[in-house]
Length: 230
Image (cartoon, rainbow, N blue to C red; front, top):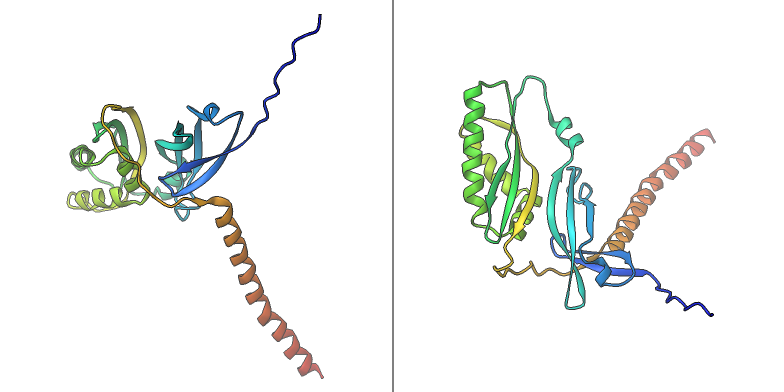
């Protein structure tokens, strides 16, 4: 008996829209539906000028298009160790709170300029908890992720905490979407998509231009030295 022939499925790259960063990236898969539910980690260090942040996205497919939904923000350990100083104290906390359409976990990391007493550390922790819970209620999960990546959320928190004690660092060590309320409708931020490949080509051309500009004066110096020898 002849064995039944198996269908050969050719894999290819599919474009995924990422409204949070305004860029597109590509994923390899059998079909567009096969990407649904997949998780992708993106290192945002280069985009944030050396600030070590990793963002985790969950792929969702709707209207024959793939979207990247943010689920986690993680401040990398090497960045925290680099910011630590001798003669200072740090305050950490884990806060479960609700935003407009989701339940989230926010972990702040606060670094004081000098060693402080336990009372001051506790006061900073309580003040940060109160402000974060109140602020999260005014934002949906997209707005929350956007403000943390743009450092707006941390700056506003730092201004509040500096009234208690001067700080050298105020960051969000982790942001995690614990549960999304599907009953509440919300809109993704509408942004023009930019392909990462195009941006990398622009950066490469700029680097080449800088090298050529620096190399020109070096040639002039060698010509001047030859004239002096003659």
